[in-house]
Length: 234
Image 1 (cartoon, rainbow, N blue to C red):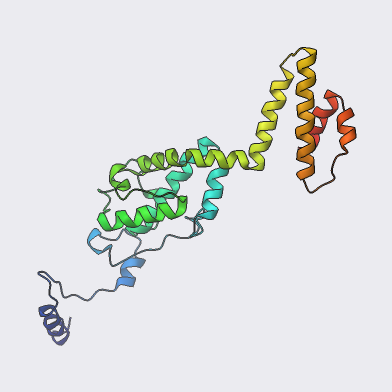
Image 2: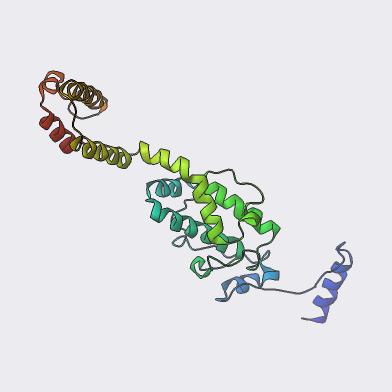
């Protein structure tokens, strides 16, 4: 550093109002472009954006991600949440590859501090739509622990979304189909159940946008024809 520049920085440091200052010139862009991790002391100055491909399940508002997690089967859901945690953790720590983050590694040991912990909590809250406590990162100090906590919080809302989706409706119909194929009722009870199924099917058809089934033909349909209709149309 030229003497003139060094003295100018020294003069500024005398009026900075801080107990400790370091007059130094840094190329922050060059530091951010290096393929190695940013030193912890510089992470508040150098932020590396995570590539969109790595964070593809999050569109910023979290809507796209929430739809994806709602449609995932339980076995996939925890892995998606772990990917989400590691993606946003990489963002706040200035890392380029979320998959390099150890799922069982301590978040504080990775360089997370009180400021970046709040930032991580805000990112996760936006992505999931959950109101997360301010201490969530400290209460669940690894990526895996944090993912499991989010999974437990999302359980009820995800189940409700699944039930209200086309996939969920078809799954429930399949369960009903299997159950009815294995149940044996007295004639009177069988007629009551068949009548109720007929009513439900007629109402459901009327709510659709396609051709509405003729009510009289449904009334006259046999049990086998009703099951065939359920299998074919729904």
